[in-house]
Length: 489
Image (cartoon, rainbow, N blue to C red; front, top):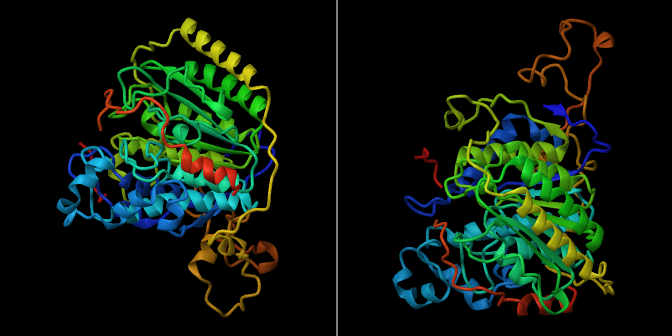
């Protein structure tokens, strides 16, 4: 690992991971494989990133927490349906779109709870200034609607996380770099000016069929939805040429006090369902750029169906979050054979043609800038008393273990939450990480050595809806202020 140049200050990073996530499986042949999150975690651990951040296993989201956005009937269905009793829920399966792309599998509700819990707790820690960046790669399921599943997504952890942020923050910016349009999040906040949604996605004969340039929001939310439709094969250079100026202008105009970045990796070159041509570093540049604005930042996962590339990108972006650039050699880990034959971290672009001409990109960018001028600056929000929710007591509980007697065993949560300061490695701890830092014999005197404490599926136009329809629940909340391991094909 090498420290990033130009880093003015280290960020406090909270990283959420639940080992159970890798045990869920959508079914044979399904492109969504939750194992990718566990593969990413293996890289994070074997690169040594755990020493630079706090690691948490979030409390799974409850039914009550999920119904802050989703309908009671839909969440109750997800909680009750199983592969063994699904024949009794045929009518509900069609009503809630839980079939085909969004199948019923063992542990479905638990899977949704883990994903949503990580994003909600990450948002809660950001709001309480317990970290600067929160990461939940098991999240980012941006297609789920208020009362139905869509595009492999059942519970919209992003909407739930944003609702948590809105309890403390006046304005929240949502940015989506998945190859698919972030329709579920846009739809949820289409009528409010407290959340601005920005999506960069492929448009035209592509799931979910929404997200055209003219979709800008309605009512109070007019001009608070921004869509940048892109064509096949976009390169790193062209993506950067539109992403950075647009996001800069959005932040200047909207002035958010917190940002959520959906890092779907199906926009990478070589993805099984995507059609963009971004390299790993081109994709990661978005994370680095958004981080540079120094706002509370929630990073979540999303799409990504070539598992070895998903895990590469998210591990590299985890490194950027903590202020380091990972080396090119993949460290030995339990999924090492997946990264052969080159065993390199990078995802390289292909020689695919970029159908996004400079004229087209400039024209779309100009229209978006015109829309931003119509916004008229950030809306003023009169903040009220913050409503209390069940998880508040857990968030307010101090994790400091200074008062624990030295002969008492620490809880694993406390050990995981300790970070290692730069330059704090002892002689033995640095072995295997690029060479020992202290080459003196361990028989030298303590006075000479000195010691240090070491802390620990389909990509076609299959959308059934063209416009927002699920804003009522979110609007009510706002007004009250409130896989199993398997080798890839």
